[in-house]
Length: 150
Image (cartoon, helix red, strand yellow):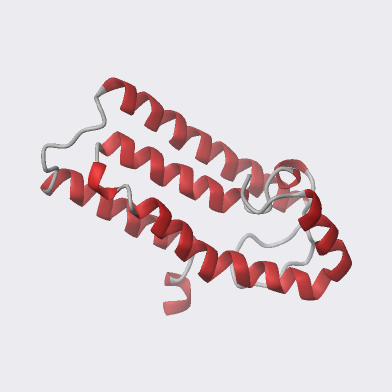
C-alpha cells in the first residue's frame, strides 16, 4: 500500500492541496494580479497536461511502463522524449506552477523548487540510473543529445 502512495501524482496532489490551503486560509493580502495570472496559469496547466499525454502515448507505442520504480522494457527516445528525458515530470511541474497561479497562492511559490527536488531525488535519478545500467552506451548517447528537463 505504501508503495502505491510513493508515486509522482500523490506528491503532486499533496503540493496542490498545500497551495490551495495557503490561498484559501492564509492569503496574507498577496496576489499575482487577477486575469493575467489566471490566463497564464491555465496555459501552464494545459501545457503540462498535453506534455504528459504526449509522453504517455509515446511510452505506450514502445510498450513500456509509465509506473515509477518498475523496470523499463524499452528506452524511449522518440517523440517528446527527443526534447526532454522527463516530460511527464516536467508536465507535473507545469501543472503545479499553473495551479499556484490560478489559486493566487503567492506564498506557495517555494513548493515549485521543493517539488522539483523531491521528484528528482525520488524518481528521476533512480530511473535514470536504472536505464544507465540496462542500456549503457545507448543511454549515454541519449543523455548527450537530450537534456533532463528542457
